[in-house]
Length: 209
Length: 209
Image 1 (cartoon, chains in turn cyan, yellow):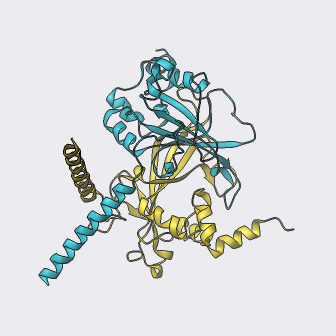
Image 2 (cartoon, chains in turn yellow, orange):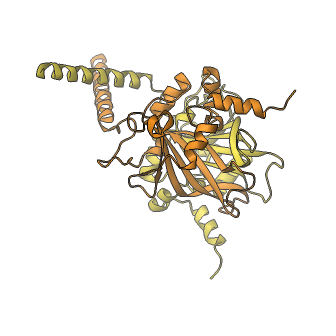
Image 3 (cartoon, helix red, strand yellow):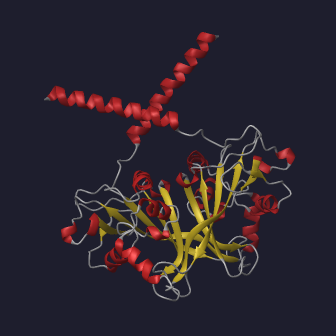
């Protein structure tokens, strides 16, 4: 009986090992991947990445951004970058963040108020790849924005798009809006990684004593 | 040179193996875990689980649920249960779902409209454990609700709480509100796993021809 148990245990360990090797072999490569033409591949498994937060109808100008319709924005980040952020308070090279937009509906099933999420209406990526996106070309910190229309390769947005200037001017950590990610904001505060621009903006917004 | 490369590769494989074994040894046990007194342990790593969706101020009665304040509800599920759902269109035994409530704020940083998430205001778990929660005791399908006040062990909600009856009457799949989870609803539709009660309710809600 003792031998049989030991043998079963050895079998289980061997099986575990095999499964781990298979999992390791099948795991997608860490970080962004590109086509031969240099376009960013669609991050097909982002719904299994780490969720950072959602906003509904957020706008940096007063009033609803799209009168008559509602939209949720969900943000995900690749797990390796999330782990690195928890340790350091900032993003490692090769970080990939996904912004997924979905319609916000009010009436459906038994719901009568507020909003719930339905169809996806867009996917945009914000990624840090310092070897590919040079600060000298206008990609501050090695960050670039890539838009996806469907699940094919993405379209790099030129650095003249407003998202670049806005993120550089107002985002709390390394051109990312960590001030809107409730599990990461306290990490950045503890590690002292808020940008000087963000700290100045927050100080200016405080009521004078 | 060839030998050195082969040797380095062998070293990398061995390292990979070791890392996989360590990861496997450190991974938390799959499914729910309980204290010696039978209370559900707080699911400490749920923010690394699979995100299902968020709602803002959803209510099953007309009008805002909490006048003057906004609340997001984020739903997460353990990765093993998510994988099983993608294959089968329903939940396996030991599924653990987490409902996390967070304040929805409008004014902060550069935001001027809509809502973004800030402080966590509650965590509730819905879990399926047929050995522990018997249908004969009122836990339909082996599902129970557990409320958490802080990160200690949870408090099992009695089956007289309204959540049980409402989920049994209106939830689309196995007493869970899959109709509000946009990545899972089409899976359930394809697999034909919607509940009879949900299908009847949807049919009744359609305008008559």
